[in-house]
Length: 575
Ligand SMILES: [Zn+2]
Image 1 (cartoon, rainbow, N blue to C red):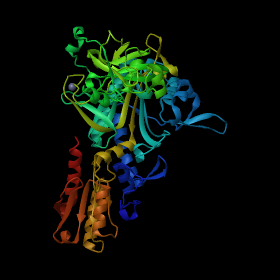
Image 2 (image 1 turned 30 degrees about the vertical axis):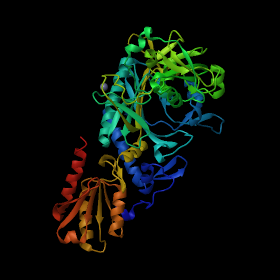
Image 3 (image 1 turned 180 degrees about the horizontal axis):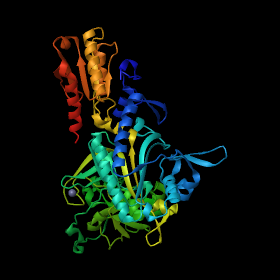
Image 4 (image 1 turned 30 degrees about the horizontal axis):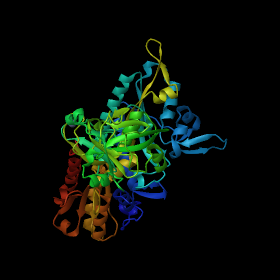
């Protein structure tokens, strides 16, 4: 590609509308342009990266035995009503009526459509397993789209769906996808982790998120230093170390009432009473689905709402408002305690080993000391309800836990029969008995991958994309366009490399050297070849990797081969 004839509008300044690095760089480097809130055009330079991501995904999906289809963006409401999600999905589902007044939506995901396809055409165990995927544009009407294509309303996704005769088969399909995903992210050249995740609103029984590691990531990742356990913060399990001293009933002291005027927060109470937060039982009043529930965690622990929802099998769990707290506990916010509370009480496992604890007194400005379970209150249900934190042990091997940040770009779910039951997708097994198909679903955000790659790979001058997903592999900068030898040399390398199938951008603009260098850094093309008057006179060109501080020189007659070797070495380094 010749820069002079290409459509590559760049910005010198960082656009004010962009909050994060990837969004800034994608706008500045002419990868994307905004059409409306959360809706973007992919310019030619950005589309090249998108297409490379898609190509790798497609190759690995095909290699794993998945088969490509293409489903419509517009979906009829009937299917969503059948699955129950027409009601449940909320306002992220963009709904509309067609000219015949029929309800429809723009697909944010395709479980319903694919299950409908399969139930009409798959009737026998002999037709399974089957795994169908597509790379397609989706629409999710985010309330606050931001971060460019990282959280857009319209986005390109690869989604795959597997169909099996039983749980065991579904497990194998899931494993095949997990392995394919690892190869895909390896081939992208990104640092990533597959972490155990909560199954969230899609539902199902088991899932992993594929996270691109980046300091700027929004998701907390927990991983073990000793084994391969990794999970996101919502999911990370906790195995409590039991404190034997706490379970000895001999230790119980009589309850004492203590006036704690104005001390309603954990910090205020611990300061006022000079006790550490781990001696406190924090009592939180929640509305779980419709029911009011008191939730107990140790004072220094944080409640994990996802775990609360899962423990109670609930759709929603929200902190009660001040009025409901007062109605439930008889005191204003900050003084709730389990003794005497009339609602169901659920507690984190760590509370089990607490004794002579401090709790709220269910009266304004009152706390209780030496509160003990069984004697002073009863817990209806215990479970792992808190957020993991540094110092906790790995739930698998007891090893040390590390915390990092990541960006979710892929997600795989074992769905079970959630959709096949709802849509009655059944088949006859080898004995002629009717069974329900067992499903899995597997997504990768294509545009999001490019954005996440940029969050992981950039410096103050621009992007440094890994070569497999960079828009071009090599850029050639002829520094003096009026010097015929410079231009001829650059043209020769350009045609040699193009003949070898290398993606090359020849910066043949009549611009100053400084402009070309700055743009080359901004565009982040992995290998830069500089052809200048002085070097050509000495019989050499400079080859520099974008990620390296310095370049090396190569003789004119071996320049193209030297570049080819550099390109090959960059790919080899990812294997
Ligand atoms: Zn471990």
